[in-house]
Length: 83
Length: 237
Image 1 (cartoon, chains in turn brown, green):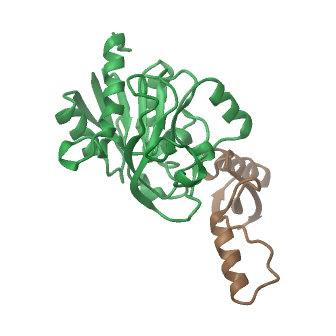
Image 2 (cartoon, rainbow over the protein chains, first blue to last red; image 1 turned 45 degrees about the vertical axis):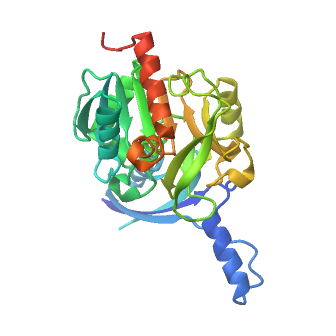
């Protein structure tokens, strides 16, 4: 079966996100004064083959651990749906 | 000493490193393409600077899975000496051979300039021959050099003498003002607990030729070579 994983990778909350900080400051200047903070991460869409959803979940987890994220500096969450 | 300089697709300081080691420091050097599955008969493996795999995903994240890296990891675990410069440092962190990670510079810019660094201790081959009171002027050239490690990890590293270099000014003063990229505690270079794997963001190979008017980087490489020669350490002998 084909599955699609939508993975969000975010810098850990404790870490300074200079990109998010720069965007926050810029937004305040152009009329979005209500914006308190912006944090910027990555969105990864991955199509994969797996016997079932549980198996797909397992592999996505492994991929996130092994290469897609660096747990020292990033956290992630994902959703999986049948393609 | 015999050096092996690894070349990944996107490495761009490999030839500078080979040139300095071979022509200026008179060492034997072999080039190791990243697809090699074995590393034989070298004393030191160098992972050079550059933009391996375009720095996609995270700097060093893809290079870390190049075929040669399994060998580099085995080599290091057996006590072989490994030096990662800039992108090489990032790759060693991604591979778990060095603690911590390198994040985008605080100012969001690629920084290419001479900075000063000061050795933290003389207990590693890379720093053994350096004067702790004399700052070295060595260039950095990176967009992701902000060293980060969790607090407990950093405390252990401090205790184990794993911090090699800190950014400072020309007088050796270490302060936030002289921290080019936002690294924790001004860290510019570190080593592993066993002190045989080294990583630094500044480029010693870019400050080693008299013609370039700055040779402070040569001192770092000379320290490594002389110390290893003195100890007559060769992991394969």
